[in-house]
Length: 312
Image 1 (spheres, rainbow, N blue to C red):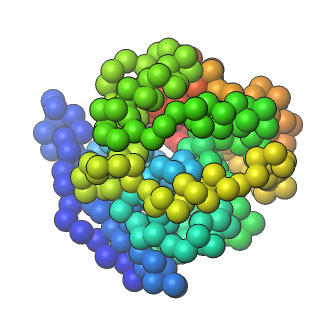
Image 2: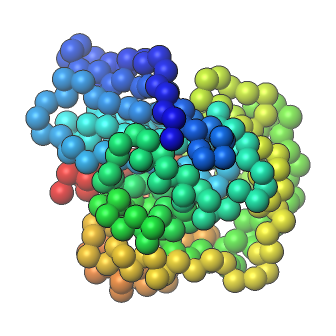
């Protein structure tokens, strides 16, 4: 797999300690079929010796991209006990990554792509953080490369999603027409999801929507994903049972797992969390107050708590 790193940017990690900073470096990896996936590597410099050296790998939501984690990545690396490195990747048809054929937009192909990215980056053990539907390829990776994921963090994600909740979310989405501008998208997001995110202020809505309209280099004139990808998800028959990945989750029975669940989430229920704990008794659950599906990681000191989990 061909790997290319691009120009590095630097962000001060602590205004009072000028020698500490976070580097963000874009990268691109070519898959076997020549599709190029893009993402970011974040590294902290001069961050002290209390850090966790297990890198974090972030997988975005169904239609999300690597920018979903941009502000969170810098927050996490700013923690004194945070990791030394974090990688986020945009899957096929998202963000700055190439579009693929519709046949390659499956979670199984995504799992194989993520493994290829890790191989190209020479990363062999990670703490994996998946937002929402990013959990599907994350869990499918486990039997293919059992030693790769040492710790797992699922953000309003699980081996199963509630069927009733999915039906409600799809009904809600179908009643809203696509936005024509970024500002329109922010307002529509508030109108559609306001009751599920009572903790959100204006900056939170903007952060959430701008990530979806960013291709890794700039804000775009429309959401940053392939229209065929959206049609792929729309064509799925949600009257059928949703994918169940409990067998894959059993691989994590004796590994550290953290489950974040939005208090207002309709997709991840307490029943599902309890079933996860039956398999993984040490599972750490964190209910995120005032947020639905899926919680914004830059709020409520979640970066502090995730750093502590990674360091434990």
